[in-house]
Image (tube, rainbow, N blue to C red; front, top):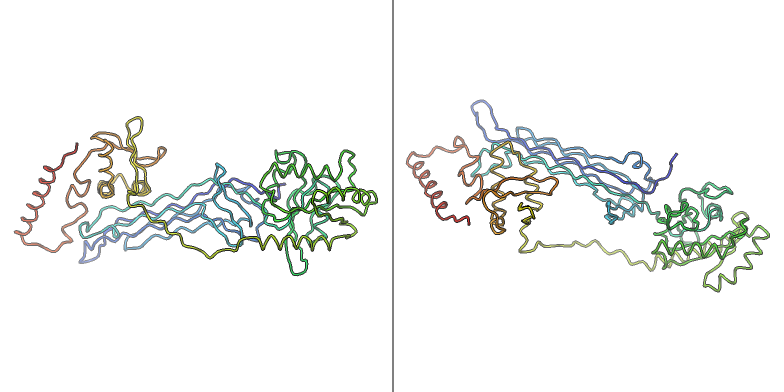
Length: 478
């Protein structure tokens, strides 16, 4: 049964925003009390949060599909819908979040560090929020925006100061068990260690963590054995310790060749050349192991390595090793740049940034892309003519119609708003002022207005007709 998983693909879905409500207040002696439709609730986010009590990604291996709750729709009486509940997914310290292409989205180190993997959709406005001096009784509301759908890859990279690397059965698990209080599984057969083990070591005033990385073999960096799965756990370590077996029973192996092979695998994996190395000659409690250690030590020191002869069974040489590792860890910590105070980065919007683009595609279709136009389209109920007119007004005020004219669009040309897989396509008809403005008083209800003298009403209607006729005469579509 799988007990440790350090790489999973996670499919997350944020909650959808609730729809706004179109409602008119009604009570005795006040049959048309004005719009009172409430706003829809926000959809819940999906957050990845570091939890120190979590050590594996096993839960997401078995259940890779996770979804936050949706926002509730608004109701009459100016009652807004309830926001969706955020879905918090605990992950181990050292989890890296990547997209499907392998690009790093977030590196989660430190308890409580969080990342929003999927953003919840915003709720739609009710007709009470859409009411204005010119639109006193909107007969429509905005729809909620769908939440994000994301596929992310989670990779766990162990957070430790020291990594013990070496061949299977070199004694790494035994060494970490006597250096710390860790209790890894120990046996005399290869690949006993199937998961990285962590231990905490105290040497003087320095406290550091040691990781026992599962055994490496030739070709580990290309996927042989267990090495490729666990080499990533070495990346965060400040110090590498080569644990070499001086009492191996295999005739074709010796400490020097083992060191060369493991170093070649680390080189092929990449990114570890700057880590200080220490060599530990283990199992010197065996007579032949002691002799071999004394024989290879001069060659190792000639290569520039600090060499320690130890026995995990007899507890020989452990104190010197633990203090030497503490010194290297302290130096690595001192060399790290100090964390700067949180800075607020202000990225002002460019003066000429319209917030959308209009592109003419090869098939003659004009495609409009931009955060606002695409969101407005998703919020529109196309079964409601008034809502469609409101969308047209918004697009016109944003400058979409003007840009379509500049791009060469003519009456009857196809226009698509949104990405290719989820776009709204319509035949464009140019107008002086789109939708509601062209119709004059869309969404207004004269029953909400104070009575006006008959002469004043006639003058207002004549002024509106004169304005519309003048705008039509001045307009040159091409």
